[in-house]
Image (tube, rainbow, N blue to C red; front, side, top):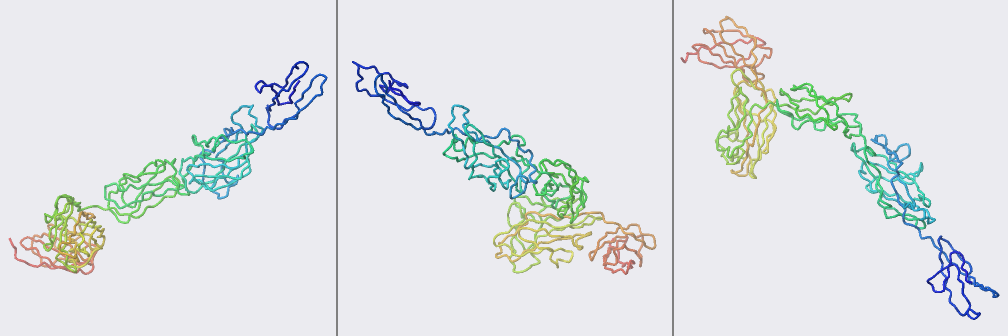
Length: 583
């Protein structure tokens, strides 16, 4: 009888195996027979003993055998999202700004579970645990996060700066054989975030103790944190309003462009996308609707119809919303175009002056844009071009000009003159802008080849009741053919009815009296129609006096005469000059 120890088997043909064999003798003897043995363990470890050879009335013989089963660890462990983990929703990120994470100053943002032998087969007991040594995550929207830490319960195991990829090493997180182990991630945030944005952790790589169970793959299953709904969503709460697009210079009765916007921001200047309250705007100027109100959409109120109905300089709008501190805009001007031409034609320079397409206030008469005789027209589309600016210094005979005449009973208050231009390579290198107010003696502003915005807000250009001419001079061109052109222009200002002064005169036989108010040293017209010739009259003038005035008298049977007087105080005395009638 041949008997094998536990976990061993014997066979006579190495095919049929059993734990014992019965060998029958032949003629009372057992001849030489080969007996095969094999190791058949079902558990890891070392197993051995004696194979015994026993027969009746014979000495029992033994052969010692031993075998060892080494652990062939299973590679079926995984890391999963912890289904019991409770995510923070609509995270008030501003409450978690620390650069050194603790459980008190951070927020839990993900929970994961190491699962040893995730197959669920109870027969897969390999007698080994799964120990995580390092783990790497990809992190979406990482720029919003400042620090990330890995925790085992209340114990921090590692902390790193947030990045597109974050790694924690030196770990010994262990799930026992067929058991589990939970761990969490905590985070703090930067000051710059995007409202309503989620961030997500995804496992991309793991390493483990090779003496224990291993993971199913290099990413242990590639689990991710949950971002459904409001999980791990950033929340911004507005605490102030600011201008996104500030106020800009605009035109009377035209909506301001670009449209001003008001944004609802938190203390870190992040936009609150949930802010939808009313935003009101008032102005130091005259708005079409006061206040102008717009509902914010996703934190932004856009004032696409903000319109001023009167011109003004140095104006400001103020925005307010709820309990937020009202905010004042940058200073801006509102212009009233009184003479405009964007000059669109095939060859505008063929005409002198050019008037096609000009837009003019109904109480003005204008010349268009013209050029002096010393200049030569240059054919060009959509611009008024000329050459002949090659004098080395200012030349009073080489200019573009504009003449503007108010209708009787009206006067002009200018704001500014804006033009765009261009020039050739041999262009004039210097420019001058002047007016007929002082017979073109003084320069106004700083004109340039590409254009300029020249202020006409000075007193000299207010209360203009007579024709006024402006000229742009050019000089210093390197060649006679060097060109300069005006591509478009706008005179801004207001045209209003001239106020009538309070005047008394003796005797009381004045039949018609018109008084056109101006200021400073410019002309003032007084037109009187009388029944008879008078030699002397006293006229009480307005509070603007004293000033230099220019009077024009028109009487029946007498020619119009002009002369200058300087009144004394508020009483101006003048003598009519007798002139033979022309009719």
